[in-house]
Length: 439
Ligand SMILES: Nc1nc2c(ncn2[C@@H]2O[C@H](COP(=O)(O)OP(=O)(O)OP(=O)(O)O)[C@@H](O)[C@H]2O)c(=O)[nH]1
Ligand SMILES: [Mg+2]
Image 1: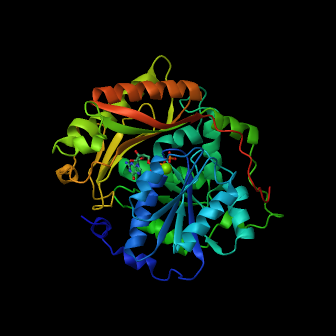
Image 2: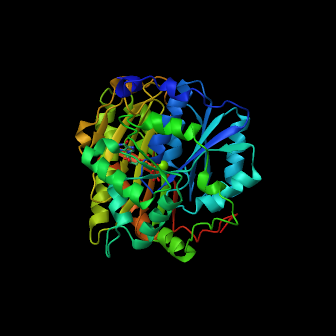
Image 3: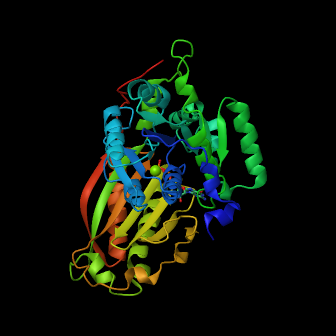
């Protein structure tokens, strides 16, 4: 089933009238960790590429080694990673990434600021509008996970999400030109109605899209609205007349600091021969069932139990990705009381997430196309690697110990040897934006 069939219409019709000119169009999609930004970017990049657009993508994080970058690079579009700080604290780094992609021919760039970042209108949107008119900036979309909305709109004492982290989420929604509620495939019609009423009541100046990157519902409409819309309305209001958003930077800093941040890359070797795992594993037709799948499954379940006990440590987002020459297994967990999902990709076919089997809750159901692991010929020098990004409500040392333990146990149980080639754990520093306009 293709997207056109899903939505019962030809998506090309939405793009009629979209201006084509020399300046590069930039679509920013913000929103909290795990909201679905990267998945939306994947689908948007695919749709735009099908239409003949050259698409560039920009990822952003406090440290290098991003699952998002690995994942998005499989779209076939060029991906630039701005790592080491958020876009607002490394404004020049973000502009450089836009320039690079434009010089490489990108006509549309989709950018995802780090999930714990806010005050984007003052620190990114207005500075881009004023300093870089060659960038045709589109309205600011901010995504929210419907499962997190209650925590944002009606925060409670002792909720799972720290109140200062919830404060960041609220600010993100407040400054959006368009709030995007993703994962609508997991919502009933009455849920959607209630969300629509609540958000339009609470944020009457803000456009609203409710969509699913998995089913495609609402996705084409969002893309068309953003491309043909008037641009970043909140950022364009005159600075002197419209006060900027009131942001308590102490609270914002605290909201970021309650999350430990960890990025790691592990190269996988076969336990007995010491060869890179791929050369051993790919020679067996049941390779994924017995090895990569087991590894990811073990790692996620080990992490979940270590994070639950002795004191529950809420997850912002735990992402892992095993990649090898011909495939990828991605797993995400976006809250401690949820189950991880697993997605398998065979490169380079079937780039649409919508047409793939997305497995929820039961890792046993993972389906992998055997052709991805049919032969070891010529793969001796290829490696398989496991990338881990964990954002968890705890200090970075505790998080590092937990992740190391989970890697060790998962690798052992999968008859592999893991070599940690990069490991960074940190607490994000206080945000120090390069620019802050109109506040
Ligand atoms: N059911 C459902 N799940 C989705 C959809 N889009 C994304 N997800 C899931 O939501 C989780 C997070 O998705 P991402 O796209 O990585 O979220 P993100 O906002 O980029 O997260 P960060 O990069 O950590 O800020 C993953 O488990 C996805 O599979 C959707 O349309 N429907
Ligand atoms: Mg992401």
